[in-house]
Image (cartoon, rainbow, N blue to C red; front, side, top):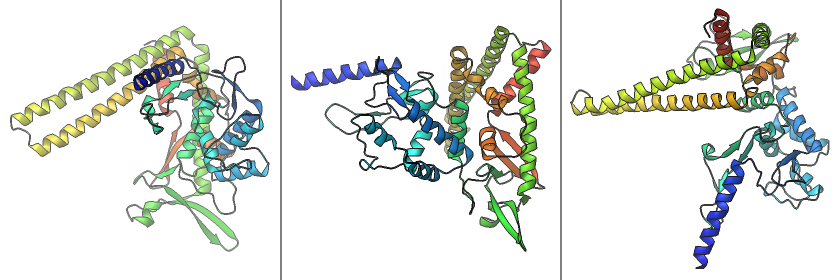
Length: 404
């Protein structure tokens, strides 16, 4: 009887928590650093002005090129209370395995957890951990696709454009040049266009003068590519020119959007998105039919076992990629219908940047995805949100022709 009662109570609590999470109610014991539970409704998050200013400073420092270790050191030097210490200082009975008492300090882990937390863009992610049943205290991690995510649930501290730029920066393999406080503007963004390996910076001394250039890491490590040497100033000038040209093109799109009828524009965007979704569904259905035909070919002896396995795996991978792309497109369509402004944040990000005289780390990491260096000092610049840019260019051309 006791066991049955505990099981029933556990199931009811799980169901209740799931309902609350789906309604965008915060059900954690403590709000993330930068937020507080509302005094009127403990399931709502409100911005803590002081902590929010620290969070903004962390994101700003990271996007400028400072390492997480340097950011943590600066916060400790300025005697800024760590999240755990701050929560205790405002009267919360907070305990965590990440701190070491009242004098706990900022560290790389704390800074990284803040930089990767989507709560700061207004998205509420819950249900990341769970207990298999009420009889154990073991806590397991759920797959990310099973998390409860409510977008635009509360007031953001960081804009989405900055947050996504920081995620790209965290994904880069960067090193700080000796004698500098920040990484180089293009650090982690340069790759060889021929072999795909990273471009590395080298230094040559000529008397009292020093010259910097980039070369393909595959040339020396694996002897699989040529040097692809290119002067650092020359490369940065070419990238800067490409950035300024791209910004001018984006501003043309922005001007077109402002002049276009909002309702007509929305219909055009939905129509184009539906066409892409239909095309992707058709491709996936075709690959599914082809995969089914493989079994018949194998049964008839036309395909051998090894050929069948190889081709079946190939079609399975293609179907999986189609499915993933369809989910992304469907999510984009839902965002367009419910949060139309969210899908044009990249335009606002570019609009704030006009013409640059120098290439900074902030400019590079917010606007660039990758820079490929080819033989003969030829470069190809891939911009952040390039797919959205190309989609808007195509849509603008169609609307100007009257096709949409």
